[in-house]
Amino acid sequence: MNLPHSLDRVITIRAPRDLVFSFFTDDAKWAAWWGAGSTIDPKVGGRVYIKHPGNVEVTGEILEIRRPDELVFTYGFASGMPIPHGASRVSIALETVGDSTRLKLTHAFADVPVRDQFVQGWRYQLSLFSNAVLNALHADVESRIDGWFRAWTETSDAARKATLGAIASDAVSFRDKYSATDGVDDLSTHIGAAQKFMPGMRLERRGPARHCQGTAIADWTAMGADGTQLGTGSNVFVLGGDTKISAVTGIWG
Image (cartoon, rainbow, N blue to C red):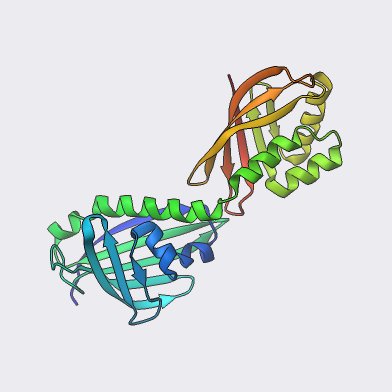
């Protein structure tokens, strides 16, 4: 098959490579980024089936699969337009980079005009893919956010560090109107100082957290020991590929 023209796209997803690859080997995960009813048979010669909105159907066959590194399959439309069955080839390669995965996609075509029709499509499709992977990785993000707020009520330095260590990276940074800390030790000391100036203060999450591709936002209320509302705001949480919080920015008001 002569396919001299290709489009390439590279994205980095803050998730482990094994998890990323699992979205190529499981029907439910495959459908999570392609659409309900899409399926994949993860073996050489296995059938690839994609059901786009509007009942647009794509079929293909797996040419190569090496876990957790590479997936290669043919790609063509059941209708025969704009690409007939088997007339293009998709190659996806994964590489571990720190706590993230770099994904390189190459889609090879026989003709330039047809190739150009797919540039924006893959930009969109891989954003759906990244979201699907990271939504799975951070499905319990609210429990980590609640742990963060709980740490601010811990009066023991050892207890604070234990709470933070379970949900945040050792090098976690925190920035807000009154804070500029780096690392769990610095943050724990800062929380202890805050408790001296505002004894009995607690932070409570207001409403559900909103998450997108490894960044989450949660609204909060600061309450005094007597139940008086001291302030409100929002925190932006950056999440690592190990699921831990790597950075937080707090915005008051």
